[in-house]
Image (cartoon, rainbow, N blue to C red):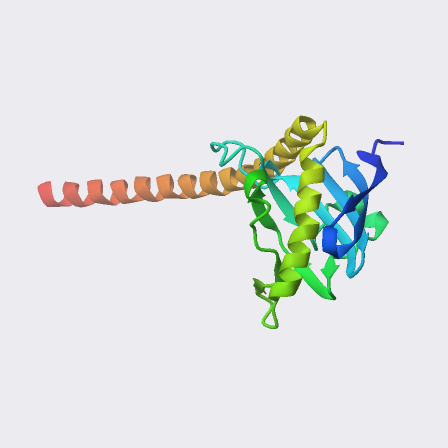
Length: 201
């Protein structure tokens, strides 16, 4: 049976101060470099996926900032689909994303929800503070992982596969365009040559 890349989860509990205790069950997808965290606390339910930001970046471009990560509260890697993850809700407000943060600014970033128009919008102040406490604790848990370098390498390889597919399709289309353009140039040169010949005859 082929390796799915999933690593068995482990469970920890963190203190959220005035928001109670947060139970965190984690499952790692070693192929994508993503980790799914299933969260349970008073007024907190659902899952969040954290990924190194390199999973979304073009590996042929300079690295934007080392240590950046993506917080996905409502979209998860396909490997996690059999585990039926549900989006994260805090105070019955469903969060959306992804949100890109550096580990250093994780305590100050703005979690989002999907507004009535479908566009992301800020959370109400109380829910913002509550969600920030939850997600900052989660980022701190991520930061202490021993396998961050391996996860970043896996995320970069996944991005390389995605961009390889994209650029291969672009290259094929651009080659076709170039061949058509060269044909059009040759045809125009032939016409210009014929017109010069008529004028100098």
